[in-house]
Image (tube, each protein chain N blue to C red):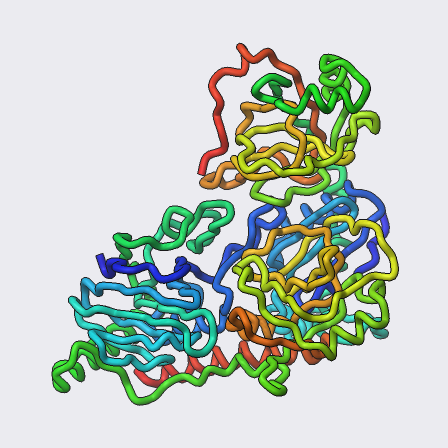
Length: 343
Length: 244
């Protein structure tokens, strides 16, 4: 075993890049809420981007490292530490077996990702290793981690094995030379996915494009959507980020919307008028009116919003949405290429 | 069949509106079989089809020059236009063939009433019928799977006779057993797994609707025709519930 779970944290699950391809059968695509952070962590830990890692929420886990490991930590800052020494994030970290790897509460952001070379070894179910807690499958028995769970790392993919072996050796020697239980390089990857549409007076701006029922909302509601800030509710989860204390959104027409396939980022408005931004674990179909969609490039920012955070929406177009997403993808590919050069 | 109206669903989805559910299901089958690398999912629901695409892969296809875009674009967004064009290209090629292939008929054995269907009597009363009449009417009708949603393998079926329509329960149940056959509004459905839910439960099937470890995990898919066959409780055998 590679790691033993001493304390699981508030809500820690095994997640990977999700299981698209099964939505037509009612199976949620799932995957890491902040897929940018998980993919970056995987690249830094010597994996392919889609490997399975841990997603911790608001308050992190305490893990006993049982064999020497190459890991990387990205996403929210939960002041990770190794036997009490603070660990750096967004870079490869080598940890000696017997070390206590501990995460605290998120001081910034909401979700922290831990990748280990070889990925977390859990069976593939419907082409994914991630946990679908609502349907109760995938990951570790379809549930969040509990104390006493044992996690194994898998085998490093051939494409990355030379890199992982090189950095394991290099950092292992560095740790020995420094007389420490861990070691990390001074370089790091830049977290480049969280700018969103900017920040005004402490309010995170999520960029949106109009949804199918956009024009069925009242003029006042549409105006309010783009001016009044909303508060992230504590009942938010991987299914949806629930927003409260903002303007009540009302439609000019009543009547039901026929269910259709929906995707993460969809901003739906239930009858009480407070919007819900759907997350990675959203159901495959939905019948609430859709006022807008948060653009894909801003989903990492959405994943890092915590209860009490303030958000505003800003109107944008498909052209800008796609270009922002392609820039983010390019950043990950640059990271991958840059790591290849550090062999 | 005409290629439908296409509208954006965010920056990674398209919504296609067809004339009827059969066409949406056939188009989904067509896209899924073609398996282009930009396609993540094709989700049919009633007469709508949601196509989820991967903008990065589509950008690669666009740059390769293998995709012809219409000269005039109604909507802004180059990649959106590319997604719509790529979908039209795939659907244009063999949708007629896939429509003729679609028709599958699945018979679902049901134990109606009693412990298997605790809401049967109240449903029958609301419909002004005796329970046996309600069973007969429910089993005589021919249903179409309009979509799979809510949970893995849950079929939403249209075709419920109007007089059998039921309101949802005012207080949803915390635990509905796997295999429960239910009605709500003018639809009927089956819970593949134990779950909370607000539909009226009229019976239970021993048919396993969803298998997580199978190559094709569901017994039913959108577009299928379904008939319910009443069976006595004694013949239902052991409950084989959906396996994880």
